[in-house]
Amino acid sequence: MMSSITSHDLAQRSIDVAVLPVGSFEQHGGHLPLTTDSLIAAAIAHRLADDYDLLALPPVMFGCSHEHAAFPGTVSIKATTLYTVMMDIVDSLRGSDIAKLVIVNGHGGNYVLNNVARESNVIGPRVLLFPQQPDWTDARHRAGLLTSNHEDMHGGEAETSIMLDRHPDLVGDGYRSADHLADDRRHLLTVGLASYAPDGIIGRPSLATAEKGRLLLDALSSLFKAHLAYLRPSVDPG
Image (cartoon, rainbow, N blue to C red; front, side, top):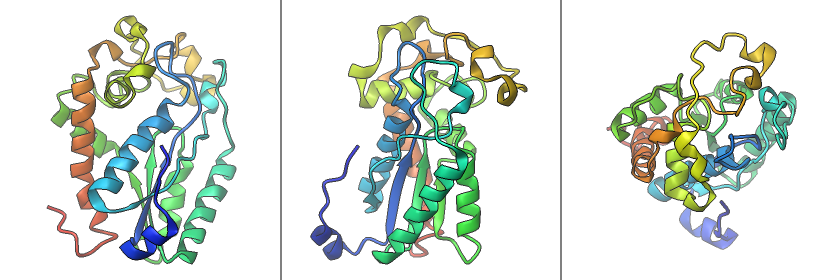
C-alpha cells in the first residue's frame, strides 16, 4: 500500500500525475477485513501507477462510512473533513509541480469526492475520479462477473474477487455462504445498512474467484486510459 519512490527518483522521472487511493475503515461482513475498501483502492491505484507511470500516493484509509455505524469497528470522518483533506492534497501537489491528480475511490459513500473533482476542474481537467460506475459495469462484463453493480453493493462478488487475487490471506472461508441480496434500498441513507443487511453483506461473494479479481484489475487499467487522456492529451484514448 506504500510507495518506495524517493524525491530524487521523482525528479528524474518527471511524473506529472499522481494517483491517490481513498478507502474507508468499515465492516465488510465476517469474511473481509475493515480495511477492504482501502486495500482495493490501493490495488487499483498501484496498478494504474505501474501501467501509466503515475506517482502512487499512500492511501487515505478513513472515509464517510456513517451508514455502517451500527457495525463494530467502523470509523468515519465527516464529509467536510474528507473534502478538506482532498483539496489540501491537490494544492500541495502543485507545490511539487504535479498539477494533476487521479483519485481512486474504494467506498461508494465518499460522495463528496464528486464535489472535489467538479470544483477542481472548473479551470480545466486536473482531477479525475476513477472508477466511475460505467467503468465498473464494463469491467464486470469483461471479467465475467455474474452480478451487477447494484445487486453486488458491498462485500460481494467483485470486492471478494479482488481481495482473493491481491490479499487471499485476508479472506475468510465464510465468503462461500455469505450471499445476501437487498435490491430495494431506497431508505438506506435514513436507516443505515444494518436494516438491509444484518450480517453486513449485500451481494454474492460465493461467486468470487481470484481469477475474476485479476481480470477486474486488468479491465480497470485498460478502461482508465480514456480517462487519462483528459489529463495527458498525448495519450491515445484507444
